Amino acid sequence: MLGPIYAKHRLRIGLGLVALLGVNFLQLTIPKILKTGIDGLSDNSISQRELLQLALLICAIGILATILRFCWRYLVIGFSRHLERDLRKRIFTHIMTMDGAFFTKYSTGSIMAHGANDLSAVQMACGMGLVAAVDALVMSLAAIFFMFHIHAKLTLFALLPMPVLAIATRILSKRLHQQFDRVQEQFSLMTEFARSSISSIRLLKAYTLETSQTKRFEKLGMDYVHSSIRVAIIQGLLFPVATLVGSSGMLMVLYFGGKLVIKEAISMGDFVAFITYLNMLIWPMMAIGWVTNLVQKGITSLKRIHRLLHSRSHLPGGIAGKKPDSPTFTLQNLNFSYPGSERIILSGFNLQLLPGILGITGPTGCGKTTFCQIIARMFPVADQTLLVGGQDINTFPPQSIQNEISYVGQEPLLFSSTLAENIAFGSPDAEMEAIIRAAKAAAVHDEIMALPDGYDSRTGEKGVTLSGGQRQRVALARALICNRPVLIMDDCLAAVDTATEQQILHNIADWMHGKVVIWVSQRVKQLALADRILVIRNGKIDGLGSYAELKTDNDFFRDIVRRQRLQEPLPENSHA
Image (cartoon, rainbow, N blue to C red):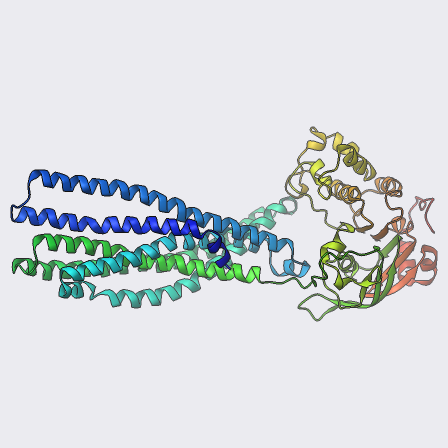
């Protein structure tokens, strides 16, 4: 997954690592300089001028090391940010291609957690984690080499506690991986709960559930904190263990090394250089715990991202570039169950959708919305059960079918932008005149103009500043302005009063001319405008015919007509 990104930025990474190695090399030369100076002082063989030159040399090394340290931070840490950006783009692009089944598996909060916490963990592992790992490896090997060069036996004493660190790191890193995975899952739950609560704030206030919702969020927060504390405990053990190992090594060196200096087996300069190298070795030993922490977090998060990116759409890809000759649909004994479920939602559908208005009605949960979503290519169907222009729909790329369809769902989805931008969402190049014409057809123009900023008024999160009926009409205007050959309206006027509904029905008559229109509704006045009406019950076709035919022959339709008879007559242009 990360290979192509590393390959793309290989020059940047290479230069950054060269700068890092340069810093390490410069640091390793300082003990040599110190040895020269101290040995010279011990035997009075060095002058003040030579000491000054050594001091200036150390200052120059420090300045050069600072410049190189900035370079590797800019290059390597910068690379980690590029990696984060590329992964985030890949996640977003992948999500945009997924079908409806994907979004039943992954909640919005879970997806947000992947794009926030998980990406951050991967970025840290591939940035500072990479640097610390390379730095620890190079510094530890180089320091041990120079220590052996000074005195092999003393080096063995200094490294004696190292196996303790290796064993402790192995045990703790395994537990860290398990606990961090749990933390990320709980963060996803908390994020999704917060998102759904904020987007439903009006409903929560209407039912005065603010306190109970706050308590539930507090419980999720406490669970997250407790799991995070467990991770912190493990992390807190890694650093002290590494420090203890380093300090134990230092204790061994002070005792045995001091004896060697007294016996003159090594010089005072060698002793100081040895301690300096050992101090350099303590950081890599401590870094083992830190790097292990970063790597374990990064691996856990990368696995979660990998699972997300390798989830596959159930929709066949079709033949690239293939487009339907006509937007007519033919259903041939179509049966449908949601992916991963054995429950049959639609059974034995045989139907042809030609230009004209097809009204759809039926009891709640009978499969009306599922039918619309199948036509809109949100869920897969078996081969040869749904044809478009006489050809199997599975031979077309999903986008080529969706480009022919304008869809208005039961729940109007608006973005937190201006009303003009929301209406023109499907046609971003639309002129203001076209936006206004679509708004007038949806009978929402006057209400928009009554707002302080008119079409520049912002709708808020999910259109929170608008009423339910206004949101539905803005969503309808968005579908109308696209002017696509297929228009699906899934009970999209349920929140609109009857007078406004009649105005809309009159306004959009010309917009629907020559199109394949699917109109889901429970209102008789809307269904009366349809050329044909489909009655769905228990996932099956219960009736298909004109308004007059079904009113006579279909028990369910006759019953809703009887129950919905109002004082107002049916529309004059209806087929009743």
